Length: 605
Image (cartoon, rainbow, N blue to C red):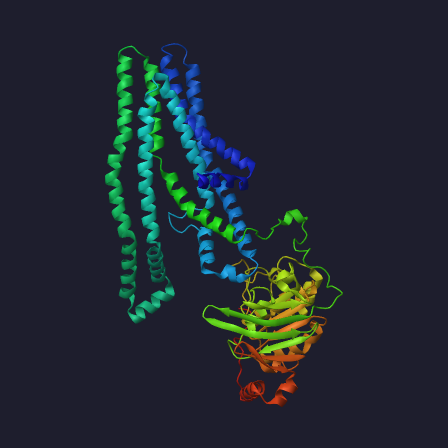
């Protein structure tokens, strides 16, 4: 019952007008059978007298029923879509509102997110909106059965339990059969998706070429058939079982209707009632039976219950989602304006890592890191892959919490600073490529034309913008109308412009994790020559596999095995002749031999 009430409460997201309209249509549809029974009685009872009123009554009932039937589906779809939109926004807010990403990355959380988003793929998939509408219709079925039972009571009260109880029993039995059928389908959904996957591969042009060249068509069809039969054989067997049991289950309501029909017919023949009343009772008894066999709502309810349960579990994981304010509520202003403003007059904070340790499952990433980053300092982190460089920056950004130790900003643990992440700007290695306009990719919806022009210039994107047909409004995705794609290096410049844009709006710490890995040497050299001027008054943490790009940093820190093993300027570390000096010399020899370690190259694609 709690789950049913939870589904009905979701109608607050559909809006009062839509909710009231759908409720009225469901109720009209529910009482139409009883209304038809009464109208038929009045029409038969006219007996030569004026039949105008009964005809009008019948016409009105039938017309109301048809109108409700015609509009119920689109209005129900509108209600379901609004509920699903609000539901998925809520889920996004719950996941994004988790203080650290390690919680959001947990497999159990990811599984719940996949379940609760409920993107329909198969006939058993049902969203929260589908479940809410079905629950309302189920309530309408109860009203319809009650109204028809009231007509039956006109003749005799015992006709009500005689017809309603068998009908309810049939509905419960048939409902359980559908629930079992639903679960059998869901248990094999992994094989269903494999079956669909093999089918999709078989029909793609690229796969068609390879399968013919390598003669693998029979192999693929074998997988297709095996996974299909593994999934559908139990479903088909249950179909046969349902059909066999259906005839037995139907005997209950049919027996009730037959008893009612027989009793009413005999009573009418004995003069205990009129033919008109007999017709009304027979019509009402049949409507009770017809309501009982409408079990389609069971599928929607069973499909929606896992979605709602997963949503409830996410609520318990994070009961305080991030506040989401509609753009209209801010009068068209940037809803993040309270987070960003003009750069503060005070310098960046003094950052201090104190005995910080952190590990992933099966691997220790940081082993007692002690590090100080002075305000306005340019600090470079170098080391071999897996040394802990990116992990350190993610901890600094507050995306993870240290297993032990502290990270302090001006003496305060960053975990205790509510708006800490608004003080940083980060270029991650795996930065996002939004299928949006260039403007939105850089500003993320908080557009300031003057700042946008500045960061595009500073990131070296002016030549790219000049070749875009729509300028800043050009979609950066070939899936969009008039959209284009960028090369890896150009996308990296977009990510850099995004990070610089945040610093112009108040961020005082800039983290650059391999910000030029896709750039050619000339573009990279030009960028790093200008970087000190672009980041004046900002603390910069730089990670780069190209040691030639970090030599201008105020200080270079070498991480090895999760610990800081060397620290100093480029000149100091080279003079020491340690691991950094060896790595730098090796890269210099490779570069002099013509080796280019750029990840890719290209232009507008």
